[in-house]
Every structure is written in structure tokens, then in C-alpha cells.
Image (cartoon, rainbow, N blue to C red):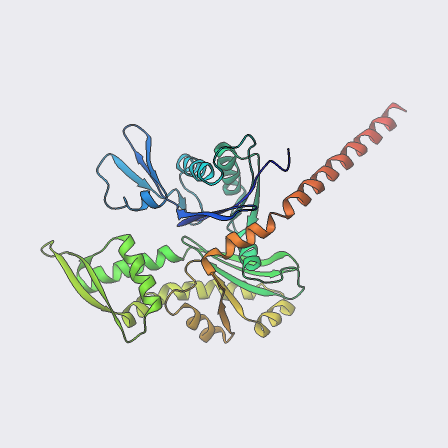
Length: 349
């Protein structure tokens, strides 16, 4: 039966959900969005199709992003979205799958229980949790069992997880509520205030991605709706202005890095200064991020290969540990049973 039961790794992010099925690889990568008819409570679209509806829905249709800052903000919507993605990933099976899900390093017990409950309700047999920075480091090719320290910064959609990893554990960590979506909002607000043009969330994200690929001396064509007059309008936005407007958000991440280094043991801190800081997550390529961190900390900064997939790759590697977790649990239960049996025998004497 164990061989027939599928094992699945899930990166349940604020902006994206990635699903890895053992033996098949990454089978799903879609936005964390679900569209629901609020009158009938019917699911109209999930993932990519639902994201297209953001900002375009009629009054009775609501496009929901059920994850906020890396944790569940709408339990019912998360459960339905997760069930849809699981059904799409593994089709029909007689046996419920075992699931390993990543959570932010600073998630509370209540937040972790919400993820476990949502996965169980969505159709999981057993659910395990793993800290995102540990998975990101593993996916970036870091030897997490090494006694030396490695600093990993995982810039997701809703949060940035900063952690020092050593000997397979997170030694010091911090979650900052600044990430990809924060950069999008900053760009959108800047264009509204500076040029008097309204743009949507998806357009703002496109500008961020294009700016990361362009040079500082280039300009991007941006179209939106003018605040005065309400007519469509087009401007040419210098990339240098985008660089300046997201710098304040980058500095917030930088402050989080400094606070993590302040509580890091001196031996591990010295290891970090001799090694590179590793950037992972979808926001790792944000314009000016790598350069700003390297300039302020005077430490080389490296963007991991396929940064947006580092967490799911690391989580998929950790699937091999699930069996050992069960073995440890069984040994602990058997040890407790033997202890209770000994106590009972002594009591009867």
C-alpha cells in the first residue's frame, strides 16, 4: 500500500503554488488565486484562469488571494484551492497522498495548524511541515548538514524569510512583511502620484519584471487610465525611477538581514562573511536588490539558479526524510509503550 500512496511536495506561497509529485517532478505552477460566485458560492476559476479575472470581475464574482504574508488569511478558500490543485496534480487515486508543505520560518502554532487542517480537509493522508528557508537553501544546492553557516534570503510574494542555516537547522531567522507584492504596490503608487495614471496589480508586476531585465538608462512603455479625465494614457517610465522607488522596500529587507546577523553566533557570522549570501524566491531578480545588499553588507551576494523554484526543489528533496520521520515516531511510540508496561508491572508488585 505504501508504494501505491503518492508523496507530494507543495510550496504554498502568497503569489504562487508549486506542486511536486515524487517520480514525476514539478507538475503544477499556478497563481494562488480562486474566483468564486458570491451568490451561489460556486468556484468559477482557480489559478491562472482566476488571476486573469483580477480587476475585471462583475459584482457577483470575487477573485480571492487566500494567502497573505505567507499564511492563510481565508481558510475556506485555501482549502478549496488546495483541493483543486491536488486533484489536478494526481488525478484519481484510491489512496490519499502524503504531503510535505513549506511554511514561513516564523509561523505561529495557530498558523501551522491552519495549514495542516486545510491540507487534511483537501484530501491529505498525512501532512508534514518544513521551514521555507531550509527548503530554499536545500534547493539552491547548499549543503545544509555542513557545520558552517549559510545565510539564505528567500523573497517570496508576501514575505521575505531570512535565515542562517547550519547542521540541518535554522539557527537564526526573521520574516519581513516586504516581498514581491510590496514592490508591485510601491511601483503602482509611484506611477499614480508622479504621473497621475492608474494601473492594475498585474501591470505593476509586469513593469517590475521588465525593469529587472532592462538597463538603468532605458525606459518602459506604460499605459493606464488618467486620474484627471479618466481617459487611457501612455507614458515612458525611466527604469532609474523604478530603481529609486523600490529602494525603500529593499532597505526594509536589509534591516531584517542586519537583525538576523545581530543574533547569529560569532563563529557562524564569520562563516557568512567568507561565503556568499544566497538569494532565492520569485523576488530575487528585483531591480537593485542584489547590488544594494552587497553594497551595504560588503558581502558577495549570489542569486540562485531558478530562484523561484528553489523552495519546491528543496521540499522535493526532503520527501526522502518523511519515511525516517515516521520511523522515529514509531520508535518513540514503542518506547513510550514499553515504559508504560514497566510502570504497570511495578505497580502490580
